[in-house]
Structures are given as structure tokens and as C-alpha cells.
Length: 480
Image 1 (cartoon, rainbow, N blue to C red):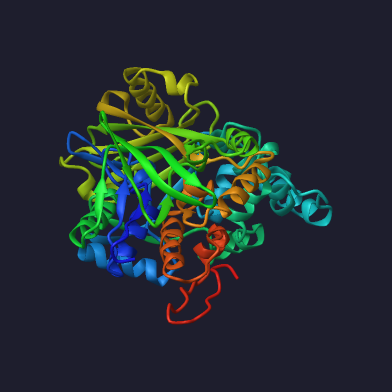
Image 2 (cartoon, one colour):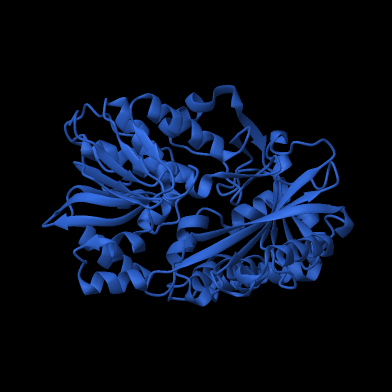
């Protein structure tokens, strides 16, 4: 394979990790990235010297090889950050993880007692049907706590009722957070709650710094990373991709490779096959959905605004879903002393009212809501900018598993193509999971056998995951 390229679609965490792994074995990958910068959803945007994430991107993993990669890339520029976050609900701030006196004062003694009684009822008389997010959470936390701390925020994120979100998403994201564990933490202050990470790493200039460094190493070793390059079509015959046709500006060009790794949205991937894929596969792709996202970065004329890294906003009387304070991630994200940059995050769908607002109106809305929550005075907001992001979150709605299975079954028949990453697998992956799929895809090319679809988000995030020894003749898949 020394003279044969591997073509990688997408220069996000999954694609660049795959490219990096290939160069370690003397191969020269060709990476095609549609955007003008690397990092995908984990890129860093800049406005007048102020840096901000597309959402907050913690670097936390229990996969030793991933942690080692991060540290090797950035060394002393990979800093440790203490986590501090709160929930804003009913006009009050709740500590997260929960604190007994804070929760008692905010909820009141009677409501706290009702929450506990609701929990006991759910444990004694659980619903026998557990197909939706709503059913899953109620069975484990009770009706009252579900409505207090789960329903409002979850529906704000996804834009659909909790009764239509699949239980699979809840099991993946909050499996190990139980009410009894939370109550132990509530009364005794222990920190043994798996979903609540107290410390994480972060690149000193934001997550995009990490992926820029990956890109530089790939190119130094002989690989190439093409930005502003969109894949127009995949030519295929039988069970193999023969080439891709890409567009850069007005130029169209064709690239052939022995293997292809794609992190582009799986729904777009199957639409670009030439000749077209079977009708049922196209139909399944049309029935998979995403939630879009936009962030309004506000420059505030105050040195210390609030102590949190981020705040979850559950109140329904404001549209903002989460508020990031990037100065509390790294002081280097803000170029001016006495200023703060906050990211007001809005979960939306492309074309809806929020998405379609002008940038100036969005900045005014964000400044007004920041003031209404009590985090700043409106007059302190001096400037701002807006970044819109399509396909930020794959939606786990009714029927999504059936549609995804149809696409998976088709792709399994293409022997020299693997899909990786969040959008490449329509799976709510964190950065480390996306990177793991990229690593294992390369190791499949080198002769190992891994089922990338078994890289389970919840398991690989909270359990120690061991990458099999490449010298073994037969290696188990992650998740076995």
C-alpha cells in the first residue's frame, strides 16, 4: 500500500486522527475538507481576537491512547481546567452536581419531599414500556424530577417532545446517574457521580488548536489536507468505491484510492453515490434528522462576569439553551483585560424563526436574555458575532434506528469504505469516541477486524477502554 493513497473525507477529530494514524505507518493520506478550517464541530472561531467554540469542547477520556495523543500534540499548551457549571431554573441557580442546602433552598422543603415521593412511586410501580426518553427517565427519577430537571432542557435542545426521543439516547448519555447516587452526593458531598466530571483538559487557545496541530503533523509526514474542497460524488461499482470527484472553487478533480474513510454526514454520503444507491437507502437517508445550532458570541465590558464554565438554561421564558464563559475555559481565549466573551447557544432548525433572524437581531436578543437572567447589564454588551452550524446533533427520534440500520446494511457491502465520527455514523459521539473510530478504521485497513458501530459512547466514555495489541493475529472489537 505504500504507493496507494487512502482518501479521507472530513478534517474533524475522526478524519484527522485517521490521517495521523496512517502517517505513522508510512502512508500518505489525502484529506478533503469542505470548510475553510480544520476541526469540524470542534473547531475554534475567532472574532476580533476573541476565540470561542461551537459549543464547549471538553477534552476528557478514559481511553489512554487518546489521552496520550492529546498530550503529545500540545504538551504544556494542554491545560487542566476545573469544571464549574450550574442550572438556571425558575429564576434560580442550582449547583451542578446538586448540593443539599442549595437545592433545598431553591426547591423548598415541600417540593423536595414531593420529588422523593415521586421517585419512590416510580421505583415501586415502573412503566413496563421503556421505549422513549420520557419513559426511561421517569422510571429512574420519577415524574416530578423528570419535569423539573430533564423535560424542559431536553425539549429545548431537540425541539421535539421527550415522548418522541428514543430511550437509547438517555441510556447512552445518563446511564450511570441515579437518584440514589445524587442523593448521597446531596447529603454527604461525595463526587462519585460518573456523568459529572470535576476536571478536564483544554487547549490554551481553544479546541481548534488541537486539530490544527494534527493537520500540521499529517502534512509534515507527507499527507495532504485540502480545505474548501467538497466531495461531489463517489463512483462505485460492485462492492468498491473506485474514485471520488471533488470540487475546489470552480475546479473539479478526481482522486482514486485503495480505501476511503468518510466523516461527512451519512445522509449526504449515500446521496452522492454514482450510480445512485437503491431507493430504500435514499429514503432512509431522507428520514434521518439533525438538530442545528447557532452561537451568539457577546463581548462584555466586565472582567469577571460569572464563575461557571457554562450554565444550562432550563427556563422556558428565554430561548437560550446554554451559556458558555470562554474566559473560564482559558484566559487566553480573551485578548483584552477587563473584558469577557460569552457564548449564548441556541438550539434550532435551519430555516426556523431563530435561525432566520438577522445577526443584529440575534445579538440584541442574546444581550437582552443575558440581562434578564441577571448575568450582565445590557449596556455592558459592546459587540458580538453569530456563527450558524448545521447538523450539530443527530436526532434519535421515532424510527431513526430502523432508518440507520438500512443505511448501515448497504454500507457494509462496500468493502473499501468506512464511516467514522459523529455525523459519519449518525451517533452522538464525543471527541474521544470520534477519534477512536478513526483509529480503528485505520487498523482495519492494516489488517485488523473492528466493528466501528460497537464503539458505544457511554461505555467508552466512562470505562477503561484498552486498544488491542496490533501484534495479535485476531483482535476483539471495542465493546465486546
